[in-house]
Image (tube, rainbow, N blue to C red; front, side, top):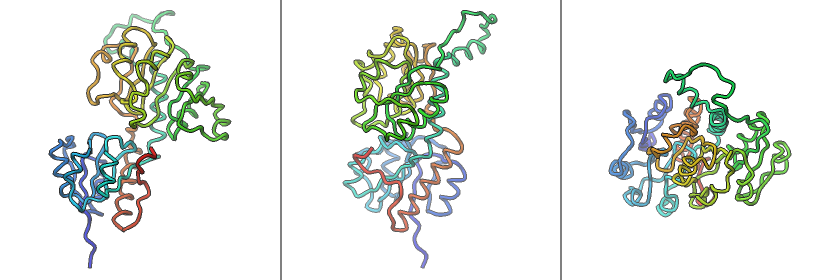
Length: 328
């Protein structure tokens, strides 16, 4: 007798190849017009799904999960970060949560370096000048940026992505410094010639470039507070490809407006998709619409991990990418 396929509800449009394979393997309900689901729609989804496949745009909190039907036993997140899912509420209801670690490391590290370059060398500002036909020709003192060779790069969060950023930064001649919950191995420190700072405050006060590469958790919310941001030097730039909530965005905006730091490259924002209008008006800021992981290869790899997690779980085995509360 054929085994009943689990009902899998996917909250956003995924790559066509992934959706097709999911339709073959599971009883799958897709979101063809890719609209972000409302709270009411998410409640309806958890009322019927055996497996929910959300993304970062879906806030799966306790109020949503309170409506979950008894057969909902897996939330297979399409993405690495799970700060939008109430892990404690899921655990209380016996729901396993999985994510897609590792597959976005190189893409996000590439984007981090791109933002470091773009902010230091004023690339976005220069591109806007061309598009607005304001360029009057080359001048030896116009549109001067800063060299990144020889600069000190401070990395907050030396996990997979932070380490990948450090390897790239070494090729650009930067000196690697890092702050992490745990010190990395001696082999990695030796390879990267990396300096570990137990004190984030002490590291920040000495860096030319600061890169945020840690996850958003209750412990890292506003890790870069108004007080800490004041530690940065006036010539420093700040790059964030992790989560907007790690930085006090209002405090950062005030410092940028006041010229207290040189610039920022931001791919994520505290209140996405809303962006502070004062940030948008600044020339010394490079703003991107949360596209650090947006490569064709990365999205396909994410989808394949989701499928493996669902298939493994449906077959009665432990999925490979379980998220354990407290270990993020």
